Figure: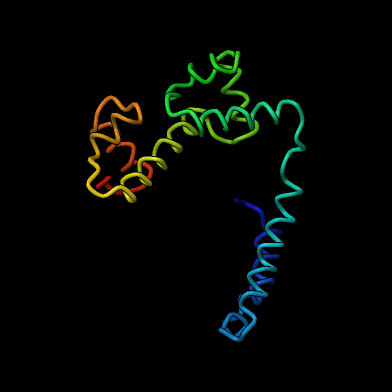
Length: 151
């Protein structure tokens, strides 16, 4: 993010970049809270005000997050009563990612969580459950996004 005012505010909150200011001195949580506040203030100024289209975008992300069967943009468009291009424009404006990237992220998050929490679960089973063509496609997505193999 190219936001010099944000960077400056966070650096100042964390002790001004001075190593002595960042040493453990009992004020670590205070500095961290100030940095989070600086980020929150910056985000409020950058985020578009939520209007009817923003609510539709929230519904789109909610649909993707909660519906495992949704694995293609066409499915999102159909369920929302929109064109594929309309879904793409909505995602670009409000989410900042193409809808396929949002779908992919949620699928990968679920895959990673299941593999971490369910011992003995095979990658092939997770791939099938999440609608991947096969284990190799899940593994390729996993490596591309997370930088490691799913195991």
